[in-house]
Image 1 (cartoon, helix red, strand yellow):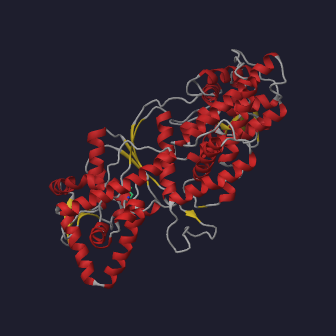
Image 2: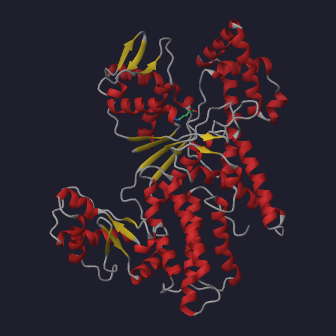
Image 3: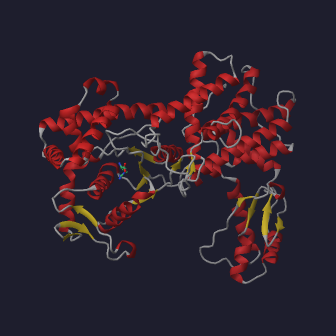
Length: 572
Ligand code: ARG
């Protein structure tokens, strides 16, 4: 499927050639959405940019290009605005044809990636034996959305939850497990009990060096493969994973693999040996380091891959992980959705990977923080992190109040189902509608509002489309030609065409908010259309065309929300 901006770009490029404009090497003609729909559907600043380079008058060049171009059958004669923008309004025939082909296209006009990649997405990755907290929302939802989008575009995606299941905290956990564990409490809520034990030991160890030493000894025993300690560790990991999985299931998020840090244990020594052999691992103060002397930003910041005491660390484990992903999965891209504080770590392991001669494209997809209403990181009254599960439960409870109020006639099952969709959808959408780099304030009132750029608003737009078809009771056949006459119809058709333009753009800079904003605009455009254009009361081809627009809107809303990980319901 050729997108409308592609058709315009091709024609504009030809027009530039016709106008004898000297096009410099590598110059790309650009078409973007019109900033003001009154002047057209799309616009281009290319004549302006070119004129500047060629030292010509931009409006004159734009005029020459418009005069030289062949626009018949594609758009009305383009108009020149401001300092030399060219505005395009595609013809109704083209728009009608395009709308029909989007309607019958299995991907709703979203083009498939020209070169499908094998992409590993490393996201969520909580540390075990601790509950997931509100801060995990960002990596978890962004990663899941990128997974959905990349798959939809035809890439081969492998999601891997690189859980933190190996680390110094296990010394304390094992010590506490042996001394203080309450088995009943463990059976009831494993993570809560593990946290309790951990805290108790932590406090004790801080006050008493002997306890600290005992914890260290337990850790060494674990690392040396002591059977009892290993069994305790395994049980802790299993219990944690059970709880994690139930949260992910509830959120409809799935991972192909859960290869946590422990999985790479046996591979760390060989990685360091290989680094030393290649001359990349150098001894410094008894530790083995990789130096990045040629990279100014890292010149003073070597990565330690083996500590003085012989232990390995986070960087070593990530290098082993990269090796595995390349050799076992043929990764050609790895996306790490991890908060900004780990920037240095990723710069180091990316640089090390290049030094090792591995050919894989890696990106650290960072994000900002979620704040409370006081603009600080959200905490509970006791100063603890706010648990993710508590947030999700509260979201669903709050949604239920709204659902019952909005539609008291729903059955209990419907109420439950719709409240879950709205509650979980609202939390996801509050995240995904933000630019990932901005910090945002977590606000229940805002995210659960039926007005504005929210999940309930979008889900409700979908419900409206379904309500139309419910009235028809299945009595609908869609036409194979459509007519677009009213302004509302045209606006909606243009908006629908943009789904295929928006989805690929998400991956340019990993921005789910582009899709969220698009869906919000689509829902608004649909409401505008619906107010202006009666559907069921109209007749003939007008009615058929409008029904088709409603159905296509419905499909795009559903698919678009699905790419954000948000489920729609037919009623609410
Ligand atoms: N478990 C780590 C943390 O909680 C995140 C892991 C990210 N992934 C990776 N391959 N380093 O900070």
